[in-house]
Image (cartoon, rainbow, N blue to C red; front, side, top):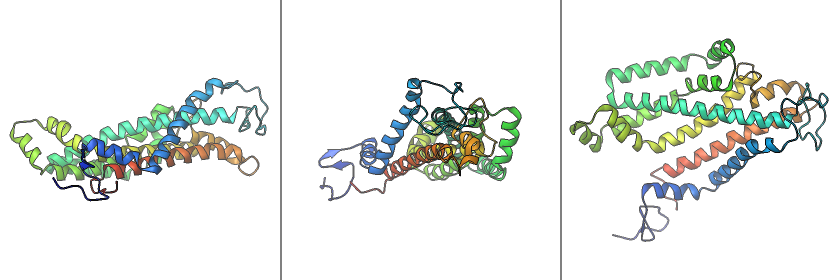
Length: 296
């Protein structure tokens, strides 16, 4: 076997054979922006879940005065009712992340199954899935949120369900396109000739070969879910009290931007930090799974 050319990243690197999984892991670990973002995100997630246990107060403690300035006792000050804004940002980050994860799981499962079956079966199934996808793209998310969330109640898990049922369409389109190409490959023809069922071909052959595309799109959906939830909660169509989120904290304090800017900027920076780090991780995963990537 000829030696690999300098600057390439193939299955044989420096005389050592690497599997596809090892190549993907090596490329991702060498992606500086993605690794930095992953480190920051992990530290922030650990912080927002651990820090509240060491605070001397909770969201239910309203003993402080209204609109107190930042101090060692209240890092971000207090809001109108005397609640500690630092505690609100920590709890809001927890709920925003939980909504993002729930939304991503639902959207990924629906999108992958719809897109894969449409791309593999084609004809009537493809046409039906395409029409359903177009329908979900036409319905405004804000209107659906107003009907479903405002009518039933804005708990965090309900917001996650609503977002998941509306954000699956981009994943479905991407997986459909890839399934159309994979369905013509020899290993799919061999599986079909051996009598494998449609479900087995989809779950055992098509989906595993699309794992890179699925992971990248799931990561981007997570960032989109966090931003979408923040936007809905900011206009009053998302999470409602007694639950909270970063968007709801913004909604409750944006009128104080001119006089008490820290009440607005604290949750705003948290939203930007979460979404930005997730997007950098998604970029790193995209480059790692890209078969055309040749940089070592």
